[in-house]
Image 1 (cartoon, rainbow, N blue to C red):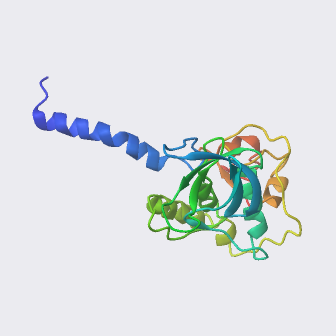
Image 2 (spheres, rainbow, N blue to C red; image 1 turned 180 degrees about the horizontal axis):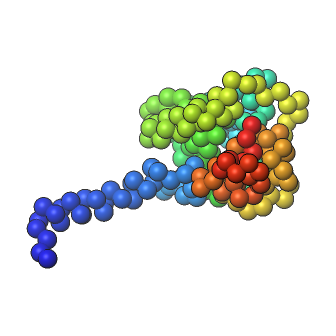
Image 3 (cartoon, rainbow, N blue to C red; image 1 turned 120 degrees about the horizontal axis):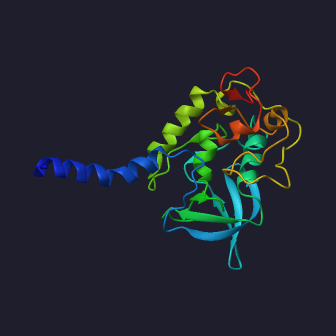
Length: 221
C-alpha cells in the first residue's frame, strides 16, 4: 500500500511528539535528570522545601522552586521535612537546575536516583504548587500532580493535622526502590512517618505491603 505525503507528515509529527508525551506522563518517581543540571553534595535538610548543599568548597542554601511546604511548627511540617530528608539524605548527590533570578535563586532538585524532589513533594501532598516565574517550565505538571494529591486527600489536603510529637526518620539501611518509601516493616510504621497510601499499578511500594481487604490500596491513612 502506498503512503501519501499527508499521511507521512502525520506519522512523522506523531513520532516527534511521542518523547514529550511520555515525559509529561511519567510518574513522580521516574528516574530522569534533565540536561543543564549541576551536581552538589547535600549537607543539611533545613525544612521541607529548603536544603543546604556544598559545591566545591562553597556552602549554598537552596530553596526548592515551585513548591511550598508547611512552615516549622505547622501541621505536616515534620512529615514534609522527613520526606525531603528521605529523598535527599545528607552526603548524597543532588542535581540542581537553578532559576535565572537575582539574589539567591531557587532550584529544581533531583536526587541521586533521578527523583524530581519538588514534584514528588507536591504529588504526595507534602506541599503546594506555587508560582515560579520567571522559570515556570514545570507549572502545568506541578498543577496536575497537585490535583491528584487533592483528589486523594493526601496529607495537607486531608483536612487532618499531623500530630506526631517526634520527627520521623527513614530507615538507616533503606531497600533500593523508586526513591520514595524506605520500606518499613508495616503500614503502621509507614503511616507514622508520613508515607502512604499506595495503589496497585501506580505505586511500586504497593507490592511491599499486604492488601488485606483486596481493594487495590495499601497503607491507607
